[in-house]
Amino acid sequence: MKLSYFYYLMVLCLFLVSCSQKEQEKIILPQKTADYKVIHNNNQPSDKNFSYKLTKLFTINDREDQESYSNDYHISFPRAFDIDSEGNIFVLGAIKAAIYKFDKNGNFLKKFGRKGEGPGETIEPSFFCIVNDTLYYGGAKTQHVVTCDNEGNFIKKIELPFRNSNPEFSEALKNGNILSQIMYGAKSRSEVQLDNLVFDTKFKTKFVLNNSTFKIKEFTNNIRYFTCSDDKIYIAQNSESKYLIDIYNLEGQLEATIEKDYRKIEFKPIDFNKKKLKRKSYKKSITGLFFDKKRNLLFVKRALERNEENSGKFIVDVFKNNKFIKTIDLGLGKCKDYFNPLLQIKIVGDRLYYKNHELTVYQIEN
Image (cartoon, rainbow, N blue to C red; front, side, top):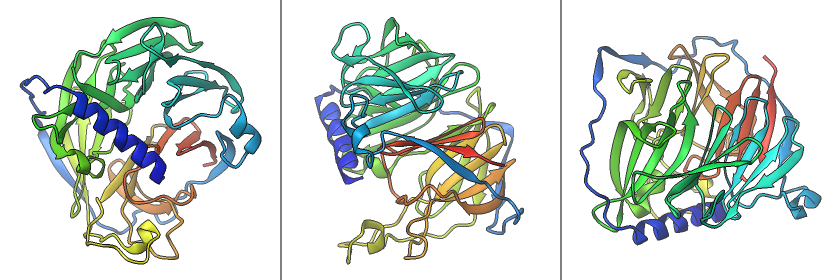
């Protein structure tokens, strides 16, 4: 985790320092709808019998598999992944600037893309998304996004209209737009501006959902996690003392805020596998969001007061229709309560895809 974190931070810093000041533009943040409401939840589960059983199917890029590790399809720094309509799995490898394609059973099919600025080429890509079986990938280094079909055939290159910026952590919306996070070089070279926004497949901004500015060194502790259902966008507020998730419609209007009882949780030595910490600091209340569209379930990875008993558990709060139903352990293994640039979860149909250094696919049994 430390290696991936520092690689990510190094790339971010090099990009931002090299950027000229971003052109100033007027940002109109969303208005609340007339029937906006706050949906309060306490910590009492409304469905104590709820369960969510996962059965492991296979792992791509398994670091324990030495034969796979030495093959050409081992993926260095798997930055993002997505699934096409046929269930094929595509993984973006940031180091080689390549896309790795696997079938729905995890069998390697092909690799395409490479470093460069020519057709189908990128450098240090961070953005990857599939919309209607068209792949979009690229990033700040080349300031363009490559598009190709799901066989890897190059379609065109799209210049990023928002200059000196880096899109990442994206999800395709049902209406064909893309929900993403954009990083900009701010007025000061020591700062970064972070926007959650929606743009179309020409990368024209439809609307900005929220924006904020941080010191570069504080950036990775100020991520606003997000996910989407078929007709809603969920974005967690970045807080140490409150548990809040804003709900937007696909037109970018703020419809509601989910809140849940929460108290500040301090980082302890066990969180970093250390005997002692130099200073006191507090965890962000929400450290991940993902949605099961088939079952209409919102999963919230929240901060925990870690101890020997729960240090190896992947704990989430589960919501249905914006109401808290139960806290469960997904059984995905050890997961820290701070930013991990490689951590990504998607639920598609009856499968849960969990990516860290490798990508593991689980069958949802219930």
